Length: 287
Image (cartoon, rainbow, N blue to C red; front, side, top):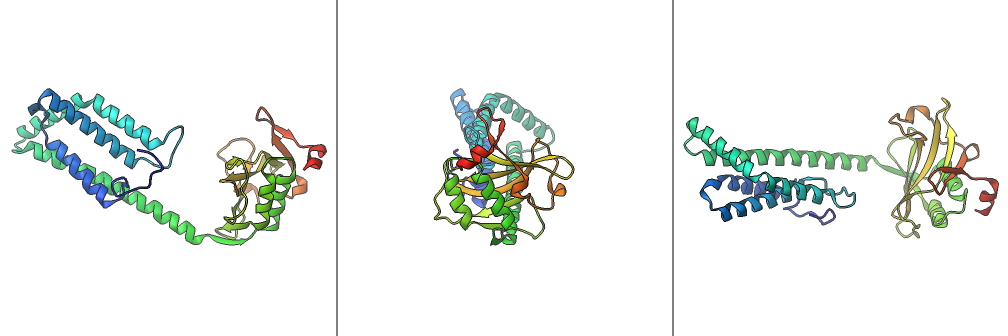
């Protein structure tokens, strides 16, 4: 249940093999009557059902999300523990459902219960498959619309000004990347994010993943304070973005019509306590 293993047919919730196997297994488990088992057999059934529940949950939860440990592993273990904890209650619920089916005139209630469980599982598989196809289609469509052009002078000069405003480890490698950078874009309208395309053979900066500690500050025409940030991913320039200084859900697109002039912004650097410190002439002279 690790997050970074390649998916196989049995771990891909959109795979027909996964849908068929999970439907068949869950349907088969519902055919077993716990009341006819010994205590040891019942515990074994509970353990097997809990393990299958955990594996099913781990396969269907987002496998690319990680906090301290992979999210799908946490979800799988939690689901397995919950299934084991409430196994006896589940047996009692099944028993009541069987009795209700018998009273309703159903001659083979266990088979009916198994069919219902299998149908529900297959419906969940179809929903997961549809969601996965939609996500894949949208991602493919976005990639098809992407275009590449030479880096615009405004982006290049602003990024260079941020990288040279102070002496920061890794800045030399990023400056070398900037000279070879291109820009990925989706339409001609201005957006407050410039996505970089960097060749694979360039030297990478350390730390590999970071928001560059120098940012550019200025104000929109409305007076709202803005900041320009450089995002570094895998040791390479990823994007340059304009954001509001104060955290808010308000979009900045409607406030802007272009990138600020490097001479009209204030440069700050992260201080020891995380607060931004102004960069003075002395610091700039050292760059």
